Length: 472
Image (cartoon, rainbow, N blue to C red; front, top):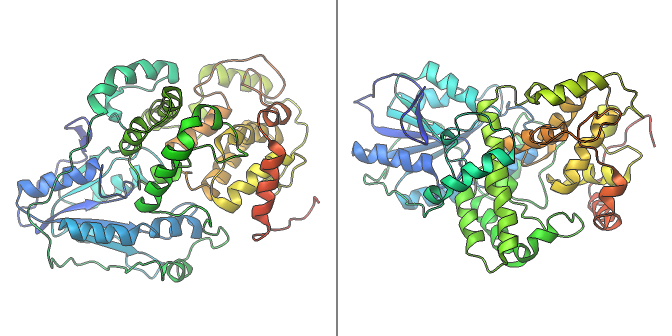
């Protein structure tokens, strides 16, 4: 790989196909038509060559934790992109691969008529492997573009230890990047350009049927509360900056009210850009303390997590934890656990802790979990499983199976934080050693926990959780 600019890497050393009919942008994670550095770069490449641009987006059935929930959320953003790209003069192709009989290796096939490929640089989950695979198959230049954060990931040359180490660097760099985004315009319109590729028609009426035809996990139902697409993301953003942001610095830690942004899934799937959100927050009519509180999370904390997954190849295991945590875990690995719950009991909220069960209910039934209870959720699993490795595996599985913002750098950083990542040593105690400890009692007293628990039970009325054996 060769870094050719702050946001662009050249992944191979192939020559451009001078007989190509178009430039190809393989849209994987930045599922938006504005504030998209990868799309802008692809347009620039097409304009330099006086060629049209083709945007390809695919959805396969065999990605880890594939389910109705994630498929539906992604498909809800397809129709609006198709309309937007048509207005821009860009050819958009979406292909839903339903099962083993569906055609495969679509990107490599489309690339045969392309001059070069532009794709998304996302430092987590399956995307790095996707990019490695296309490098082996395509015989043209492949560029990966970073449109993940306000500041390019390349500006941080190593893994940062904590928020306190990355914050001053972000503060210094921010004036250079927190600037208005310039949208590039295509010169050569795609018009009726033909692309040798299956194209799936997606609209609001057929999404349910399309999802039902896919060989995925149908037990994880689509969220009835959160819906995908940039339009839905902007609707939530507008509600947030107008009604919630003014009191965000005090409301964000209250799961019993609608006091948080609930924008993380739109960020994860790329329907919204962090830059667009940051400008909306900056321009909002809200107190400085509220804006600062949110921008700290959106920029400092979020970009710390992307820094982790970029520079630490062990980000999806407890091997990513710092030395002091490794030491304290070795010293307490054999500590007796008060009670061990099976994965099934944890998954369906069958513990003795009503607040924990409520957080799990929220996640299963809506696809979200409030960040404040998510910390307690992770901490208690550490003491309810046989060892630290099992605790991490349970948290990763449950988070990635149900949460719309799962499979993201923020998710992995959040899980690792429960074990001490990006944190400091605390008073030593059983099981946790010097890891920060949290209790249901102290957490629940900081908000109306009874109201939150009852709210999650109201969600359950129309969507009963599966009964499991062994515990009532």
